[in-house]
Length: 183
Image 1: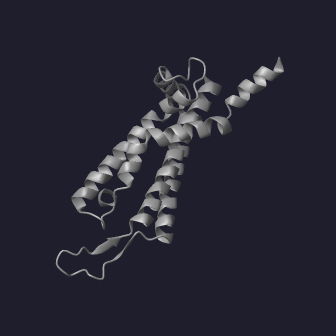
Image 2: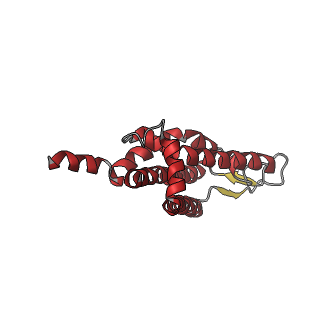
Image 3: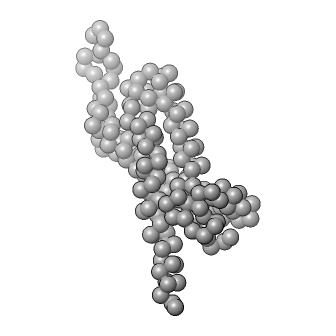
């Protein structure tokens, strides 16, 4: 009798659930990767200020969407009982937010710290592999001020994407864990 309980408990471990949620998060957030791969929309040195404003606004909207769907992605990839399935996860999250305020906001704080780490890691990658340099031809007709090294930029963008997706997956998996232990 003890064997099935051990198997059920181990399938709910964060170590087991998080990789599945992370893989699904990578797929669901592909629009964010697509946006990040356009330096003209994400970096002032690669495009105009108008494009930067548009890209930044889209990026912030995609981050907000990723945050709101993180629990649903977790419920889709690792459903459990009637509390953590795609159809009931919104209600479960509201219940967590009302009954376990501190624990809920702790999970949000964990996400925020991991998201900041994603940005910091992206900064380090950009520092190690500069994606922009001065254009020696600048001043000539039609020459831009900067040269964008797209290979380096792509590594920078993918790094931010991977670490950001990990932060969203972490939030979804940790909220799942909280729901299963507290509700």
